[in-house]
Amino acid sequence: MPRMSLYNPDTIAAIATPPGEGGVGIVRVSGPEVWNIIDALFEPLDKTPVSEREHGTFAYGKVIDAAGGEIDTGLALIMRAPRSYTREDVVEIQGHGGAVGMRRILRRALEAGARMADPGEFTKRAFLNGRIDLLQAEGIFDLIRARSDRAASAALEQMEGRLSDQFNLIYEAFLEVAANLETTLDFVEDELPDDVFSGIADLLDRTFRALDHLLDTWDEGRLLREGARVVILGRPNAGKSTLLNALLGFDRAIVSSTAGTTRDTIEEGFVLDGIPLRIIDTAGLRETDCEIEAEGIRRAEAHGEEAHLSIYLIDASRPLDDEDRVRLAKLDPKRSVVLLNKIDQGRRVDIEGVEASLITGAGVEELKRAMAAALEKGADLQAPPHAVISERHRHLLIESHREAKQAREYLNLNVEENAVLACEHLRAALEHLGQVTGRVYHEELLDNIFSRFCIGK
Image (cartoon, rainbow, N blue to C red; front, top):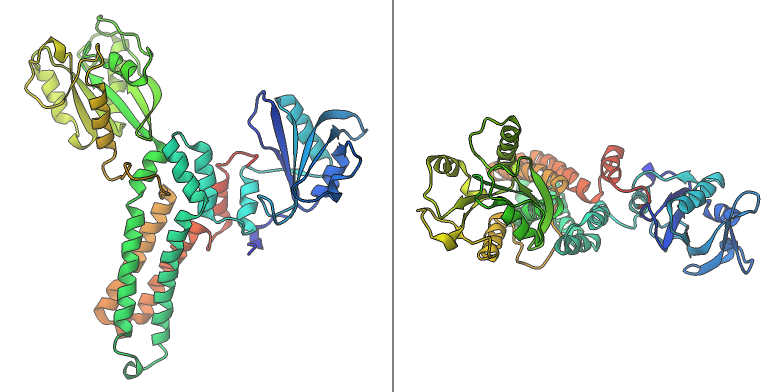
């Protein structure tokens, strides 16, 4: 059902393909005036106007300027409402790829009466016209930005409505509890069945369990969407740059026996067990009089404090010194892995860690498993990919949980006397849940979500 309160009836246009050179570029036009606009700028080879063609068909022809001069040749794809992405009449002009050609076609569409689309406006119209809900819209955004196969699979499930189904079940359950409670207000206590309030309490408890299950997916969602920052720490010559190169599979960092070779941080992307990572190699941690190296060490320590995971390298062929012991004592065991490097030269340290010889590649796979295990705490990344909540969803779920918990406390205290108060808190819980899928929405919420999209989506 269309959500018309924020609907803008203008006809919009935008380039729907990435900037730069390519075999094909697409300009998308959507809205009530699309046929007048397309007929003014696209001349089919067979002379049958685009506006007279059936849904799902192509027309081959040329894009023309106001004077009839040729801008480009290509195809016009016809999509009639409601069988389009926006549920409006839509035409996509497919021309030769390239920034200049696409800008010329878009400029012509704007001259013919279209308005430049805002970021995410096509998807916003799909939501406002009832084609998708907000969760599915965010799934589209997540799929575009996915940095791993697992993240893409989870986003695709969200696009298909798997997460929406879970939220809708919780919403309907809370709605049923609120409706049943409000119904009891019309009866005196003696007229109600004995089990009515116990039934309400049971349904509320089951709904809480479902809500908690959704909240448990946030850690996984955070890792898939945002990735994890992994910082490599350790003394000079412990093997940090060698480790970075071993993880990446190519020589990214300069490796030298000269202490202090790495003075600034080096960052590279890497995917581990479906988790997008940002690996950060840092300067060796030591006392120094060199201002440049000291700044690199300061940055290394700052990255260590902010990282999701720290890998601390130890040269296991040498006895552990006091400085290493002090730094190891400061590590958070829940988000750190100790790597004992150069084990092929003998083991002269008395601490636990992953044993490795990075120069030969030994221990790298064991380290990856240890990294994955540390990152997956609180997230089930070994299960098949599934739709998971975002920070926005988590915030609204927590607020809904808080309101519903207050309602349950009122019911447990004295259900007959507190039914009205419990209903008020349940309605507040429904308000928060409704903002997740878009049952409840306002302009600021939509702007916050769709402004992050690219203009052509």
